[in-house]
Image (cartoon, rainbow over all chains, first blue to last red):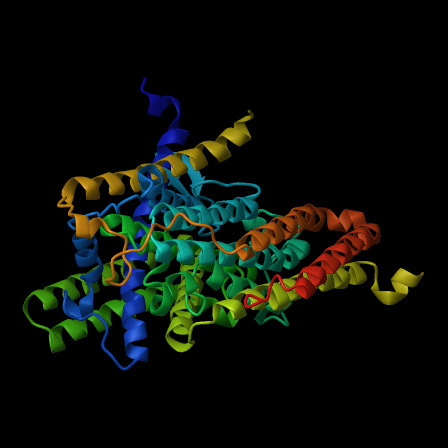
Length: 411
Length: 123
């Protein structure tokens, strides 16, 4: 009897982790492609288009190039800490993915029924905050260990920024915890089930609009993204905390940042956008919406095939046609009655996450960078009081409603 | 440890170990695959082309310490707010009043820091 036969739990966990990390890293790589493409078009450029059709093989080329470059270790750098920083940044960012549930369905791996999350942690929300909060170590240590003034300044600035916005980040979700009465991400989504007036989804987005705006603003600052990308302010700080990093050590910071973006978007979806709940009722006149995944995948596949045949030749045509065929196959697969109910949750969840990631990129392509003093002032003087007030007002409203309005309180 | 905890935390631990292994493997792979041709000029800290003056291990602005201290104070606030948010339906108006007073104290602290100019980066 092997170890795995004795503990099927181990094997299932390993399989799920493997699949999740593979998908996440692919998503992160293509998020960089997506961002360059979208920002390019916002600025009336084409973005990457040389490596593969539409630049689709660019992430692969980037990864290989990073791998084959020389990793320079600057003079006077603290060697251990210098390598520890990217390691911490990436491994912590990837660890956060473990507690994110991707859908309500249960699947069977090697005869073990299991959920669409690596770990079902009761305090999932707190775990995510704990893990993302540790991300500041990667930045601070990298800035300090490089023995470069630009890196040090960038590291200090971004640590100060991250800890400042982290408070608003945690405070802004208190409203959600108040409404849902739980830290369990599944229970928070369950609390958002149903529809107002039969059509408006009961997501926390509406009652917690202020909380959502606070959360998303803080999340952008927390992940060091534009317009709060002061740590990387290239016009003043070269590249901030990773000035002295090259080769894959640099790529690891990049991957960590993009993974943090994905996690922040997943969390926003779970807390405010109803997680995997469909925005439309799936009964009655809207029963056809269960076939939306098929329509989206099939339509995407058809577009790719048409594009391949009309505008591309040779290798590019082959790549696009292969992708189109894969999407078409996936469209056929998700329409099967056995798989159909399984993909509903993940489909809506990933669609919302994708939309939020698009907003991230859109914001970067639209807004100019903040001045550092304004950034700190905004975090402490606006965001923090607003998030605190939001929590208090939410509590007040919930209490008033449960005790039957003002009359109930005075009685 | 109960069966339930095992179900929860063993996969989490495995995931974290795999993530660390992956990060470590990438770090080692790039060291192993990439070339290694150090030279004096290449190893210098980058200061936009001018020879670097001194090193970076020097004192920095006290502002950063102040922000760090303010962070610890307000992080403690969130630490108390979270359990309240979880249990506030049972605590009812008493809990609301108590947390209100607590937040009032913190607001006073925030205003004090504000007036002292901790958040005004240019002073």
